[in-house]
Length: 413
Image (cartoon, rainbow, N blue to C red; front, top):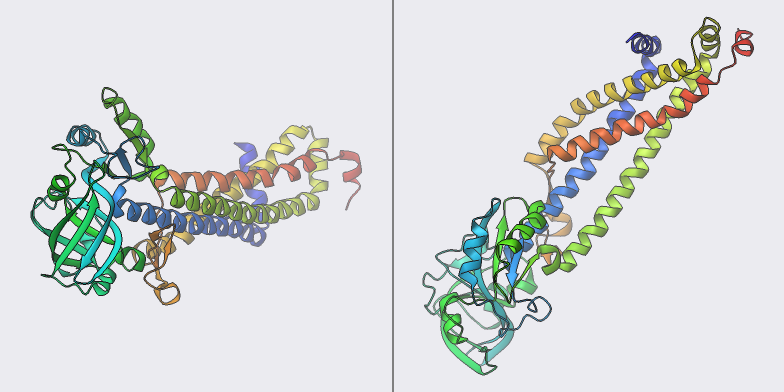
C-alpha cells in the first residue's frame, strides 16, 4: 500500500505527462472497441442473414446432402428431429424445409432456379428473409395449395405478377421428372439480383406430394438460435439426443455456409492483427514515457537504495506506476468510448451511398449501415488486453530502475 501511494505521488508530480499517457491508453480502448464492435456486428448480421436464407444456424440433414444437395437425399423423420431440437435451450425455432433445383416456366419463357418449400403456417419473417421482403402480394396460406412466391428479377424475366400461372418441373425421389401448375401469390425483393432472379418459395405439402416423399419427410430441418455463438454447443447436445436415429447429420452454419465462414475467419484475423499493431505502437509510447520518467529519477532511486530500499521494491514501484496509468487510462477510456458506442449501437453510419443496398459477401447480403455490437465478455477481454499491454510496457523501465547503481547515481546533480 505504501509503494502504491508513492507511485501515485510520482505520477502527480508530472500531471501533464501522466494525463497524456493515460489518454494514450484511453485511445487504445476506443480503437479496440471500434474495431471489435463493428466487426462483431457485421459478422453477426451476416451469419443471421445467411441463416434466414434457408439453412438456419444449424441444419439437420441427410449425411451426403451438404456435398450433393439432391432431392433423393432426404430426412425421413424430420418431425421427430424438429421436436428434439425445440427441447434444447437456446433454440428459438426449428423449420422443416425441402430445398432443391427446378425448372420454372411461364408462357413461352422458362429458366432454371432453386426453390425452398415451406409450411406457411410455421414460417415467420424472422427466420425467412424472403417473407420479410415481400413487395407485392402475400405469401400463400396453404401448405398443400398451389401458391408460390417468386423473386422480383424472376418475375420480370418470366413476366409474372400475382395471380399468374407458373409451372415448375423437378425430379422426384426416384429420378422421374414431374411438373405442377401453380399461381403466383407474392413477389419478394432482397436486393441481391442473383437471389431475386433464381429463387422460388413453394408450399411444403405440395412439394412433398409431387416428390412422392414419405409423410413428414424433408430435405432438412433448419434450426435458429438466439445466439449463433452457441451453435457448436447446441450441435453437440442435439447429436446426443438424436443418437438413436440413423441417416442424418447435424451441421453448423460454418459447414453449410463454408464460403461465409472462411471470409469471416480471414477478416477476423486481419482485424486482430491490426489491433495488435496499434496496441504495440501505443505500448511503445507508454514505455517511452515511463523510461523518460525513470531516467529523470536516477538520483532519487540512488538515494532510496542507499537508505536500504531493495532493487526489487524499486521494480515494483515502477510497475505500480504503470498499473496506475493502466487503471486511469481504462477509466478515461470508458468515459471517452461510451458516448461513441451508444451512438453507433443505436444509430450507426449509413454507407449505402458508397456500397449500395445490394452489396453481398460470401453470397450473403451485407447491411450497409455500420453499427456496433459488443458482448460484456468481449468488453472484459478488451479491458484486460489493454491493461496487460500497459503493464508489459512498464517492465523494461522497471528493470532499468532496479539496476540503478547507488554510488554512480548519487554523483548526479
